[in-house]
Image (cartoon, rainbow, N blue to C red):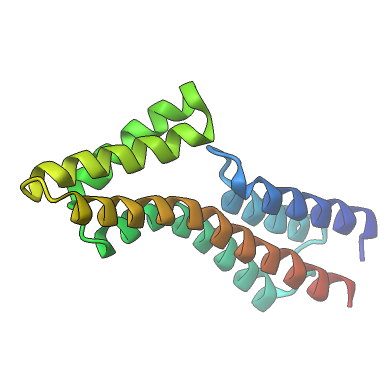
Length: 161
């Protein structure tokens, strides 16, 4: 067992978990690459084929969740695909100008305005739809962090026990 490599991989998995809250960091993909990289250093003897596949699958699923959660929650709240896509694009643009609050303002504001126009001026329905979209954007990072924390714990159990 290569302890220095295992310890380094575990530290990286913790870093990728924390980076789930940073925009534009592909934390799930980096976690998957870390697990595969460690397995490579051991000649794929550790963490074992089943654990390796499971850890990589969960890490990649975390990336998919991060990417799709805002759109899914917007759709669940009743937003049109167009308003969610436009809101996401504007939110990402505002992210560079205002930081993380720009993402929230961009997604929420755009979805609100788009749905207000589509709902014939019904502000309650538009606000509800925008709230769903914003909650999805914010919750996606938390869900990704929990999934990647599970990857880190699973890795530690598979390698150190």
